[in-house]
Amino acid sequence: MRTQVGIIGAGPSGLLLSRLLQLNGVDSVVLERQSADYVLGRIRAGILESGTCGMLRQARAGERMDAEGLVHSGIELCSGSRRQRIDLAALTGGKTVMVYGQTELTKDLMDAHEAAGSHIVYEAKDVAISELDSDTPKLTYIKDGAEHTIVCDFVAGCDGFHGVSRRTIPEDQLNTYERVYPFGWLGLLADTKPVGDELIYVNSERGFALCSMRSRTRSRYYIQCALHENVEDWPEERFWETLSTLLPSETAAKLETGNALEMSIAPLRGFVAEPMRHGRLFLAGDAAHIVPPTGAKGLNLAASDIHLLSTALIAFYQNGQSELIERYSDNCLARVWKAQRFSWWMTTLLHRFPDASAYDRQLQMAELNYLAQSTAAQTALAENYVGMPYEDGK
Ligand code: APR
Ligand code: PHB
Image 1 (cartoon, rainbow, N blue to C red):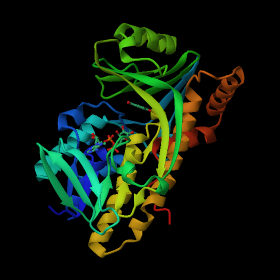
Image 2 (cartoon, rainbow, N blue to C red; image 1 turned 45 degrees about the horizontal axis):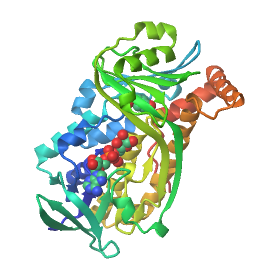
Image 3 (tube, rainbow, N blue to C red; image 1 turned 45 degrees about the vertical axis):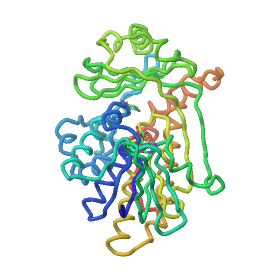
Image 4 (cartoon, rainbow, N blue to C red; image 1 turned 180 degrees about the horizontal axis):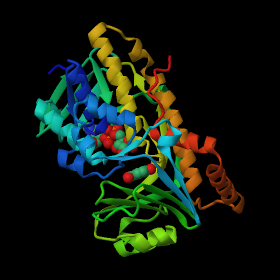
């Protein structure tokens, strides 16, 4: 079979790309290793920058987000007895973020694809890319025991950190950069009223905590955990008790506990592979880069990659221009590295590092003091948190 763009992975990156191409008359096929239910069962982040919201609307899948998403104009940082609200909107000329879970965003894109009769193959096994150096790279896969081949003009590797696309690029053609943090996040999702109206990021002497939410009735909490720990080490009661000890006492007093809908541990890692294009193969989203979740940038970076990739492919098919294809990697990486820096900074500011000295702790406190006193420092945090502009780094 023949298509213009073969897309590997039906996470947010692949689904968004396929949808934007479709709306602009470019043909694609999406190959996903898992079932649709499995993809929807993964609990990931839930903070959308305005650029990401715009992309979902552009994909004509933004209606439910606009109806049900919660617009947040601030976040809170807590440390000891200090509580510092960062007024995102006031500091950025009115910009806000949207609280809307990745699961919901993925579902909306899936529904839009289903209504449009898009070609998405779930449970496609052993996806492989071949003839990458030709003008017609091929994707092969197994579905229900039969082998299939798709001949493409381009391949989009939207298959996440553990996918096949990045590994297909010869090692000597790729530079990778990585920082693995010496702790993880243990998350718990529950149908309880969120403890605050806005997100609360906590730097406690005993470790990091985050009070987030998915809706006015569904909470998402995280606490810092050691790398060697397993979810089985954490009965729900232990989670709630530990969270209470990390939160400021007046917040802990309001904490509503309830049965966990999901608990999972995520490692914290910064990773970038560059360049993000190898001939006719493009990497996008988690396939090319990972950020620690502290700055809520993972999904948003995937959306900005897809903005650049869809624009480049549409320009190619509609006007025969390949300039944006040539610049794709550099344009993505300029924004990716800014988000890496911000995510590293938020992570370093708020966590308890096992090897931290008393000096390191004092530096964290000095940074939080500075944030409390300096509008310039707050503005720097706010403009990164709401999301840097989508630039075409000419
Ligand atoms: N063949 C086909 N599909 C694959 C393969 C493969 N070999 N390997 C992985 N996949 C699929 C995964 O099952 C998954 O559904 O690719 C998809 C990748 O989706 P995500 O991991 O969600 O990555 P992405 O779409 O780039 O989404 C951005 O950034 O920080 C995160 O939470 C954020 O998950 C979000 C991501
Ligand atoms: C989440 O709600 O899952 C979430 C929110 C903010 C973050 C990370 C995760 O920084």
